[in-house]
Image (cartoon, rainbow, N blue to C red; front, side, top):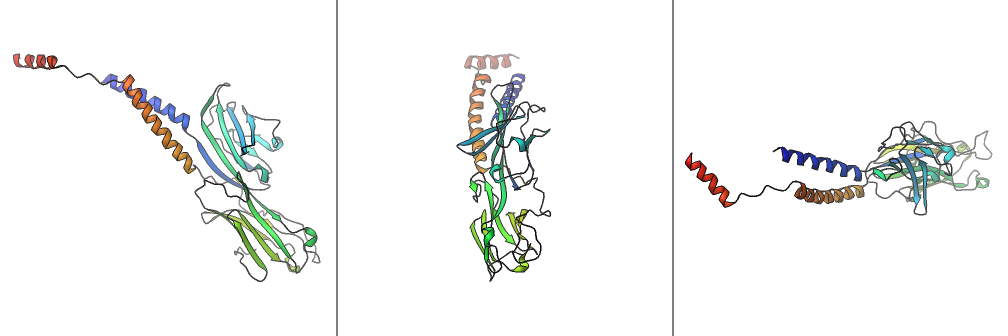
Amino acid sequence: MAEEHQCFVRLLVTLLYLLTGVSGDTRFLFTRVGDNVSLSCTNVVYQNCSSTHWIYYRTRSETNEEVGHGKIKTNSKRADRLKVGSDCSLNVSDVRGEDAGIYTCRQFLSNGPQHGGDASVHLSVLNNSLSTPVTDIKPDRPVTLRCFLYTSDGPGKCRQGITEHVSLLWVDEAGNKLKKDSRHQVTQTSDCDITLNVTLQKEDNNRKWTCQLIIDEKKEISIDLNFMVPGSTASTPGPSLSDTSPSSTGTDYTELPISRIMLFGALTIMASIITIYTMRTCPPKPLRTQTEVSGFDHQVLEE
């Protein structure tokens, strides 16, 4: 009985070790251009961050190590806007569209092999632009406002793999969804790329148009655009961000479906390994021979 208990404990330890090696954490984070954002690392080993590395991935040809052993890499394009937090998170200030991509936190112990799985954050950045040249902004002329989401797949392309429904929409100052009418025309190029064509009037000077990011029918963040209409009273140029929009600390959506498939495959492999391990370390007790059985029966009869 004691041998079976020890064998079970050994198998349990082996299983936990294997799970540590294949487990990972994938998150989706949404923010706006100009905001500050913190990318959390959920697999930290050394609390002083000396084991922590952050790798940035946008395309197959653009992969950079932003942090090595808890220190910002001086050759990083965004080194002056990066900071490692006390919890080993990666803080990005004054976010730009080109910051969108996949940030992966990895742990390395004493310059050895990687320890455990990756903890990845898919950062998407909401941006807007005025497609019409400033010189063409005049009363009774149409202008085009574009709102799009930068993702690791590119500008205006929704990130593949996220199960939540992501969409964009334009609303007026009262928060009403803008639809096609005599002044407005909304064109949805994709769920992550939407344009608003509006014919300006003098009273539109400094009027605010807002683009909202909607995830599963819930408003997450928004970004505003306003500009000066020539011939109007004093105004301030745009585009500009709204101070009333939600803070972009981000909304996390964890685990890609593909990661679950990989985990299932890993568990299947582990089951095979444990079966082999059991056969080698915990062999079944041999069956007693017929002679042993007969001898046992004979003793019972004599008693």
